[in-house]
Image (cartoon, rainbow, N blue to C red):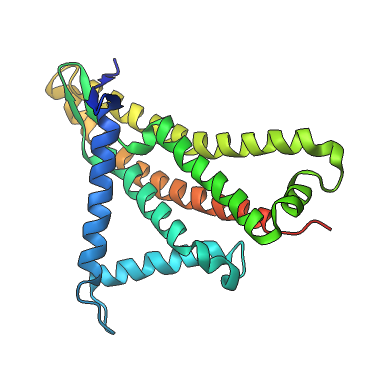
Length: 238
């Protein structure tokens, strides 16, 4: 049976403890890594600097696959931050598993639909802001919602909602399902003592390795779709 998330209260507001703790740890790990990688930046980079530069180059490639770099470089920090957070957030729940007194105290932030929807909504807002900044409000509405035919307005509005929802649920579904299956393997390992533990350990290791790959792919897909949506808002309909 899945453990219920522990609820904590901060300034009179209720929050899910697994989301709060895992999000804080994810941000802390990323900040520590970036500081450690850039503290002694050199022409001949060390291992950490190499990893950081590889991520920077990789996220630049994601942007350039959808936009010209001259126009797309404004989104580099956002895509780098988004990719880094989602990548770590997808994996962190595989390494840390805290259940106590029928409550869950830790899980991947992206195993929560609320977190995934928040990222998706931020992406949607950036898409609209980018379009308005480039074309102006009137021309942006004409370009994005009334072209090529004005009667397509309802369809365009529905498309905006579906893009936002599917972007979130694609990430959520993959990570949540992975953690549920991992939990089932852990339950199986402890069900009949040593016998099931021996069979479950290799299965758990294989599934964790598979989940790491899935987590990296989902971070890439989310960032790629983000840039695709932004690029669509910056294109002029003819």
